[in-house]
Length: 196
Image 1 (cartoon, rainbow, N blue to C red):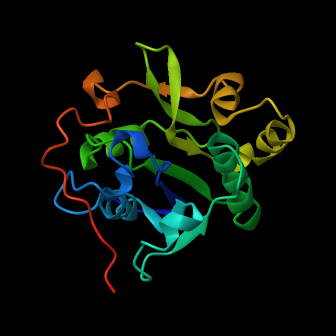
Image 2: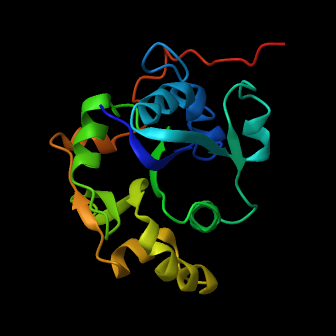
């Protein structure tokens, strides 16, 4: 994959899910913690990559990985606020988001998605089974800032609603098993611990 000079990648670490065997960012689906695997994938496309996480997750991330701590809002509003903040500081730069929740995310899937992204319209993975966008793998061009800000000011607006309103380009993976992002058999998951 070739890098886009004006592209920022955001690795969204998801939420801590104590009811589903903890925080999926630290599962080793590809030989390393998912948070670092997704960071490496985005680094092949984007000139700059940040890990977007909450305060607790930041404490577990190696210092060599740049982070953005999400504001204390519901997660869809927090992602929206982060997109606005990044675009305000980088007005000519697009944003590509990929979440650690998807264990089947691969280099080829991400490359196919990014290849169909347009410079004037947001794009997101789309699940035809649930008939909904999956905003945790999505693209936001720099021109979208004027449309994002009003969305954030509306208390009932989520990033999913924004994608619907913007009629974002839909990307449907060839294998719909992609959306089964929680591993069914958790017996062999190795959880990564932060070094001392």
